[in-house]
Image (cartoon, rainbow, N blue to C red; front, side, top):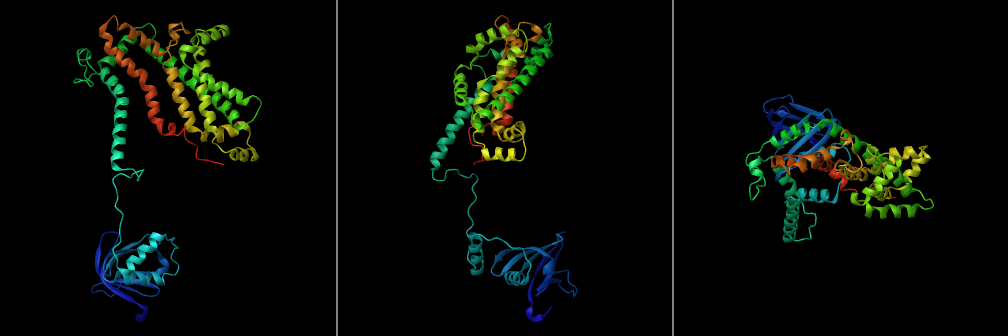
Length: 412
């Protein structure tokens, strides 16, 4: 190492294991070495070709903290009195250093370093503002309104859950407390005892509901998805008229309107008092077709054409390309379908007690509360069970569901 082309500085060296040494760092044209005070052999020594990264933090004046990281992950941290000078020397002689793309901010930062000017660091705010042009007063008003709406929407669920945990004396207290002072699970245990006294086991009602809900939802997803794919991506005579009729049917989707037509159709088909009397009408629900078709229109046709050119058939394109890209739409559709099937008592088309869904059995307990006030707590527990499944499904899939009304993110 030529003495004419070396730069020296007193300071400290800290190793990865935490050990510190006071001494002198000497940097030459090919490498650098740190000598501890009173020692002739270097504590650390490397060639520039072994370097992977070098960072510099200015401490003030010419003092700097220099971090050198070698390609074998060895790390040296120096606190040097002439750190700026040493850093510049090593950086100049480090011929094969990685190319670093610099922004305008990086260039201004380096100029400020060389001139010794104070670098203005932007303040970090606890909460980033989405609309910086809006006043703080406007933000406060909007957040207050959102908080009021959230409380109004959350209050019924909290009150319902609280009622299911109240002992009988608190259920009839006036004014009614929102949350019980002595929470108890007796209402749920009494509900299961009452359900167990029926000649049809509670598990039978639950299996009936799960079967109807799963099969009906899956069939709705498949049929609505395939129909929406054809309507959204293929032109055929009558396609627009068909979708217009499907959209019109949304006005008559209420069960009150369709109960009698569904009964007449199922009676003609001989499906009354079977599970299919609930499952088949769920397949034809127009809300799924509408949501899927509107979302699939955002998919680029070029994506489908590319898959077709690669040899994929229509069903392969549908299952492997289209359905994964419209996941928010079919998650939303699942919410509506599960809510409709789970809460359907099926009292008008299923007569056999062994085929009744869970909601029907819970409603019978609710009806008994009008005669026996001791069942009031059981009614509250039954309501929690009825509401729980749709609410939990929404909570776990809300991030995807909220994307349904937005574009898919892939554009032609």
